[in-house]
Length: 130
Image 1: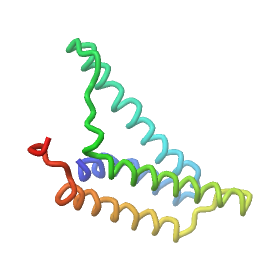
Image 2 (image 1 turned 135 degrees about the vertical axis):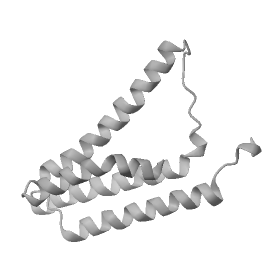
Image 3 (image 1 turned 45 degrees about the horizontal axis):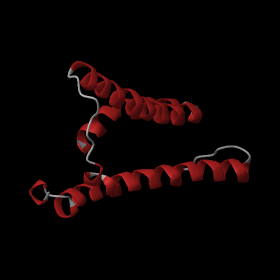
């Protein structure tokens, strides 16, 4: 799933790269955040509505303990990114993203993917243990 998510996000990354290269960093950030908001709200909400409506279920079970570790990391990464934006706004009067910000994001992504593989291989909850 992690590799599939990266593949579906590639077009968004290319659009963000293109607009940032043309000096429109605000559009690049908006594109990245907007596509994730779309994914979370519509791409999760629509299947849940369809499942509960078409199959007559009143809820969808989510086994939160199976992805808790990666969820906490995602929240931490989001908090760090927002902190960078706010710190830049407070100290410079505007949001400035420098090369090191991009390198840090790139590095954080590969650490996250590595953790996901490690978590699944060694820390994951086995279905047999439940």
